[in-house]
Length: 141
Image (cartoon, rainbow, N blue to C red):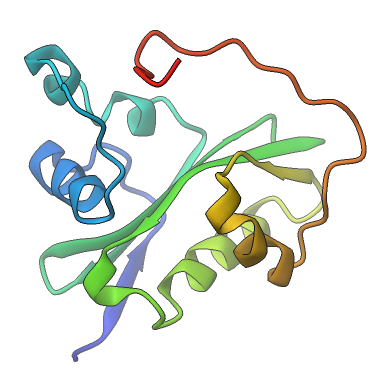
């Protein structure tokens, strides 16, 4: 496999590539509306930091961060194409995020299957309560 290139400048990622990446990782919940697909990259455009991983012209990994750049940063949507997992891409995406805002507290919202990944990458279980109000975009709630 040729080299993976990382980009920390581009937020307006191609919708079709971003959507394909989420589908390949099994992160898409049906049913999707045309409006959801049309606006699929808006959370990335509106994020503080987006780091993407590319194999040639193919988007193979991405992470987005919301941060005040001083005290708190939150990781959302760290996803790597299943064909490219276990090759260090996710770890590199994570490392680049933390290097960008190294003094902030880092939080990640994840599912039970991925908790171990973050624990082995230096995260700890949050000692305080974390509450949420679901998004209308999340059909699970």
